[in-house]
Amino acid sequence: MSQALNIPTLAVMFDIKKLEQRFGVGNYLTQAWQVLWRTVDTTDLREWSGTILLEGDTEGKPQGCCIAVQSFNESLLRQLRKVVSQSSEYRNVADFPRFLEGERARSQPLLNAGMIDVAGNIEGETTYCSRPALEAVRAEQESLDPRYLDSLLRFRRVVKRSPVHRQAARGLTPAKPVKAKPRKKRASVRSKKTRRKTEEYAPAGHVAAAMGAGLLLGWFGITSSLFDVEFCGSGCSSFRSSSSRQGR
Image (tube, rainbow, N blue to C red; front, side, top):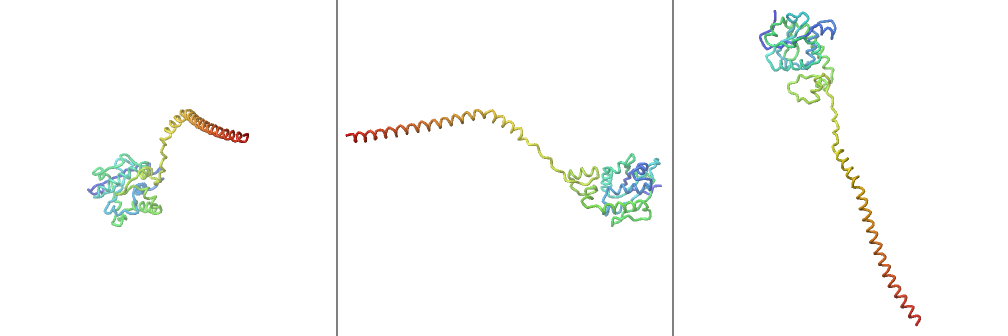
């Protein structure tokens, strides 16, 4: 008989064979709780205060088990379903259907597995699987760097999601800075066109420069010749006059 209360409930379904293949033969309920706790920040579960934990086998499926969470905070249940469904570790051990909600979840043969108190710890007398799993995962997360933990976990109520963190959340890997790809230079096409035009008009430019230089040199030659004629004319006349005077 189920010990679930008539309150909002979310049941997460697991395949026992898949759990044993991944983690080895052992307490499959503890293994299932570990998979669940790894998707949330176990270092601070005060938001879970008053949440009831349940566990048990799946009705009609000898190779299935489920763990359930009951809370009046329905937004917490929606967030939990979202982050668990995004976990690659859970997808590898999940049963079908993956989740049950409402009356379908409460109809499973679930037993009480404790309750989260105001300090974020599990209290109760039947916490044989949920509490050891929480302590093990909490020890793992406390040993991690806070920045790595922030990128590893996705259960945040108010977090601005960047593309880097969304990419890291899909594979449960720490967020790494993404190097910006260098933009392709569009000016390269224009430079080719400009180069072609320059090559086409280069001969004409050289010819024009040569003609200009020739005209300039010609002008200098004409000017110098005129100065020489005037100088010779004046010199010759003065020489003639002086020689005629001496002859006289």
